[in-house]
Image (cartoon, rainbow, N blue to C red; front, side, top):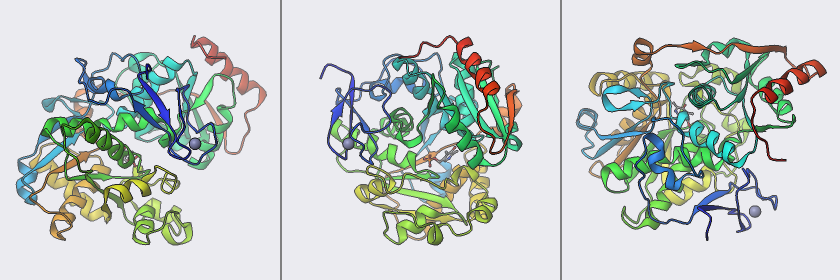
Length: 430
Ligand SMILES: *Cc1c(COP(=O)(O)O)cnc(C)c1O
Ligand SMILES: [Zn+2]
């Protein structure tokens, strides 16, 4: 194969070149995967995530030096009684060389996604998130000039900040909730030149997140036996499984898939429930009864995805089935205690979701779900907000326009957005 990578559909087995393809051309309900010609992981002499660009679906790199940072834990390892604990941290922690200034591993997704889109000439990306994903895409936009359209509920717009000015963000706020912004985002993607980011279906997002497994394994010199992460969509768990399979094929890191130990925050734990019931589908009435009320009560709201890629071929269900492992339901109190402990002994504040993962590791040790002598990789998916607030500038994104819930994309707004698109000077493949 002369291409750096091809896309593979696990549904029908087809192999084909990437045109920023998010779905199997044959219509399979399956997550496409990137298959790289280079079976060995070749580390590049590039900063941040681009060190792993050999296994990213991109040709070049961006002038950004933020990537995952791994180290052997001493304090938490001793406290929990797991002597072989690698922590892979994504966030802001200058003493450890961690420079994700929006403080979460969503920057690992945003960087290769923005670049893949640009290289494929696919257009301008659209994102509906006022959480860590939206902020990460705005930051990458600010650092590289890559335009992005972000649609969010009006009350959540103040969560969209960057640490550098971001002049190429078109922020549309909706006087409604998340479902309204997702629906409006879909309308916006019907305009020529604007494409959806694709979530878990986007191989650049998954392989970007997969660099956590790569970095942890390179740092420890081997694959871990257990991988711990808090999940909302579970995309990071899928990515860890895929990256581990590539490392096994490489041959230098071991031959066993790490068990996936994935956690959610009570009372909203649909994947935990479906996993306990052994079901490939999430049954809303059983697995997430009264979702609004339970979502309102979790401390880690990035973990409250209502439509995770659970049952889809190559999704979280398959990742858990292939790797073994289990799921954890963590209370707010357990997460807060774990976050406090981590800050005390490791020395950095955590995103509430990362605190859920730390709590799940404590639970796994206490309940003897893992052999404490084996190797653990803890994915600390976000942190360093307090440090970032002290050290860095904060730029709030100015809204481009504000619309009513349920409003369609009317003629004049359509024209305004198209004019903004043409001002971005992005070459779009016909
Ligand atoms: C998005 C997010 C998660 C969950 O990631 P998924 O793998 O997409 O479920 C966990 N922690 C933080 C900090 C996040 O931003
Ligand atoms: Zn297919």
